[in-house]
Image (cartoon, rainbow over all chains, first blue to last red):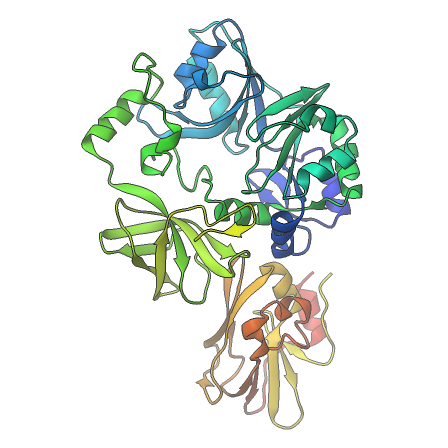
Length: 358
Length: 124
């Protein structure tokens, strides 16, 4: 199994290591619920070094990205500005979801998922063939996400010099500092940073953050936090066969510029004209139990399926994202352990910035 | 390393059974089971007076990670359930052999369970 540069740090912190798509990663360091609350109320850090940074540079970088992804990088006008997008195949299915950072018209940085890295790189290279661009995965970068209401303050305390360059950074913006790339982004619904750094600096930085009282948090808490924040997970809410229009990600697809014929656009326009049949909604269980992935959902408009189910530590109830017939609302039933249990259909997010919203 | 206590017996499905010496038994899940399951969020218990047959699933412990059935080690009648678990299911994590017990029951003599030593061997 592959290991990140922080593997030893996880072992030292008694991380419970699991196989996560071929990577040996910490599920938790004791209690994933405590880690969850730590991020909602203070600050926690995640090793996300398994994710892949890809630098796209060259004279055609901008037009290439305008073709490669469904959101439009033309929106990015200031250095360091970030954009969330799906990268589609010809049939409008999602190859991956990603964040792209703008440095200048000839220089962009993308962060893609770990599990899809090989497929993505092959796909990106294939699309890049007719453009004057270089596609360079940065496999020697580590990434630490520090998240929570006190995350920024604690990063400034732990890492000298960061406050000077990132103190005024707005959400969804990034800045470089030597070998560091600091982005005010995340996957938890809380404020914080995602810090990309050379792998040889990772362990030292992790220790500095520990000393500043940032608690390590595992993939278990990462999943409950992102689910409460209503954020999609590649492979669960969308995949190669599901389009963003069917995954409540229409807001990430930019069809404004008719000239911009990005990969998958024709398929999306056809789907849009014909009308989509399903979408992703939130579910809150009314009774006891925990909603699990792939459970059947019965709505007044037909059946659907849970795409991500869990127990929400912030709400003390089970919640889920589910693919259901479009326009389904009100109450539904979930088939759980051979029983039908009532749940409420809601619009995600469930929790943002420490507050329950549903 | 999971804790295994010498004063009680064990099942292959990671439950412990303590003989109270008066024809009643107390039952819970082992340290190994709670570690595997992770943070408990719900415990579904039977009612006092319920009867269960050998190998019936008569309780469910549910963690953030998975729901897991708890099986009757013999034909039994439930005489008490741990109501504290309703508000504090995490007692199963923090005190699986004491405050995190699940049920007390009466039964005829119990055979076919593992000793602490045998159970510990299965965990290696």
